[in-house]
Image (cartoon, rainbow, N blue to C red; front, side):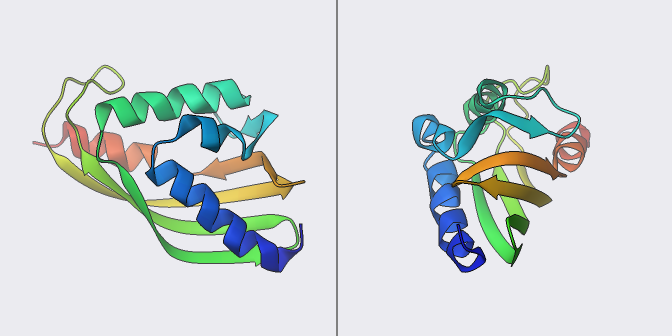
Amino acid sequence: MEPWELHGWHADYLDACNRHDLTAIAEFLDPAVRRAHLPAGAGAWIRDLADLFQAFPDWRWRRIQLVVEDDRIAAHLRGSGTHSGEFQGIAPTRRHVNVAEFAFYRVVNGRIVEVTGSGSAELLSQLKAR
């Protein structure tokens, strides 16, 4: 893919994520995708998203900024939703959370092959806050 095509590609990926369409999301992932500090593979990624969507049925991401260079995407996103199901051992708090997320993707042949990012620590701290 050309760098200019990755802007539209990311919009399509984000749309699939915001629809919670795990089948469509899987089409954007290389089966052996590497995730920094997380289990590798598309199956692990999909399971993590399924857990997030179960705990936050209204979860949505909003793109703040996207930078593309060669086969790399840097995305600044805002993720938000209401905690209405168990998440990583935390019982539902009914809190609405809003977190800044930064993700860096490498895309080859229209599929994410590597990703690193942030956001989960902030999410957990908002769930544990009093």
